Length: 67
Image 1 (cartoon, rainbow, N blue to C red):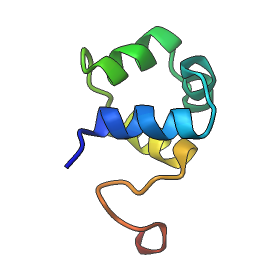
Image 2: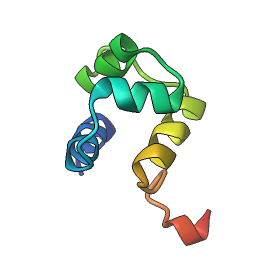
Image 3: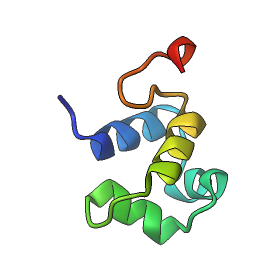
Image 4: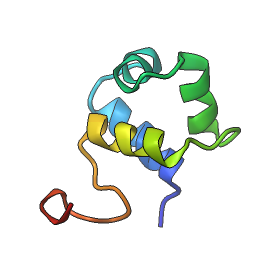
């Protein structure tokens, strides 16, 4: 299974979003978004949920309808 940071990066790029655009949508800084994608820092559950919502990806493997 892919690491969540790789899933985030892949989906962000598929949607044509920059790290800065995603970070602003989530309410974090671009440097922090970069550190999340690089695995240098871990987001809080709250931030991870916001990232999943912004990228329209399931959180913890659940489908949107299950949440």
